Length: 238
Image (cartoon, rainbow, N blue to C red; front, side, top):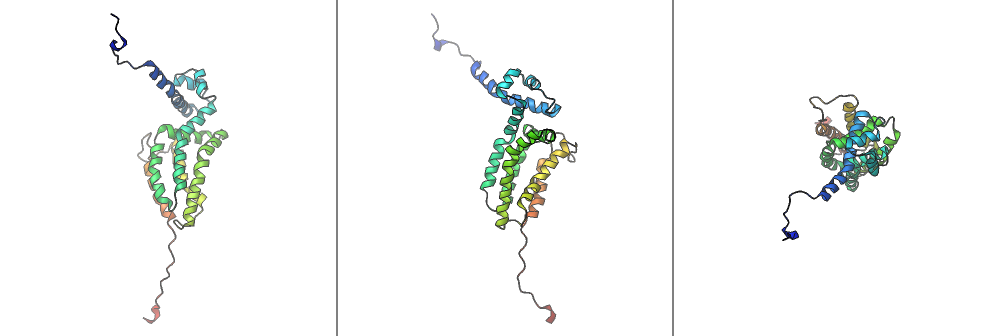
C-alpha cells in the first residue's frame, strides 16, 4: 500500500527555498562588510571589485547585480551606517522647542550605542582618510549626513537663543563646537594612533568623551545672569 502524503515521515531538515532566500537577502550586507574591511586595510583606490567579490564569497558578476560600481558600494555603506539613523535623529531635533540640553542629553546615549558598532564607525573613519584625495566621497557624505544634521542643529540652537533658554551665541558656531570634539577624537586614534589613556583597541571611550564634552559645553550655554536690580544701600551713613 502506497503511503499517503499525510503518512510520509516528517523531517527536521529546513526547507531549501527559505534557506536560499535568507542567504540571498544577506548578500548585500556580506558584500558591504567585505568592502568596508578591504577599504580600511588597503584604501579605496587599491581595492578592486574582484577583491570585494572574493572576500564576500560571490562572483564579480553577482556583486554587480547589487552594486553597479565601487562608488555605489561606498554610497551604500554610508546609507547603511547612518542614513535612517541621521533621519530619525533629525526628526527629534527639528520637533524640539526650548532648552536643547535635555534633548542632547537624551540623544547622546543613542549616538554612543550607534557609533560603538564597528560597521558604523568604520564609515566616518573611511571618509576622513579618503576625503582629501576623493572629493566626491566627501561631497556624498556631506549630502547624506552633514547636510541633514547641520541645519537641524543650527535651528535648534537658534530657537533656544531667541527664547532665552541659552546665552546669546552664534548657533552655527555652536554646532561646530558640539560635533568638533567627536571628529578630532576619531582622527587622533585613526590617523595619529593616539588612544585615550587606558583604552584598549576597539574601545574609544566614547561615553567618557561625550559625558566630559557635554558637561563643559552645557556649562557654556548657561544663560547670562540677569542684572541685579535690587536697591543698593547707602553704606556711607551707617
